[in-house]
Image (cartoon, rainbow, N blue to C red; front, top):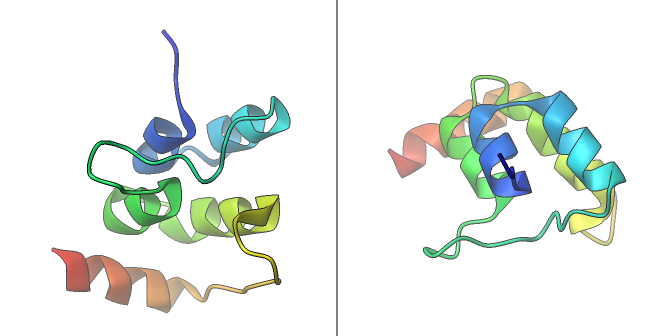
Length: 80
């Protein structure tokens, strides 16, 4: 099975996201609805704050960002 950063982020699998990024996976990938791994993690992952911080640390943004876990749940609630 081939897994993308989109799927791993959606599942909340930080270990899988780290492995994929270490193998040069694209942290800025988009799906058919233009959702990024960061967006999918915020919307669906049970460990969203951990996965989101991993993606941010991988360089999806040009400057360091810190995400507080409460912001993750607010973002997910706003989407649903």
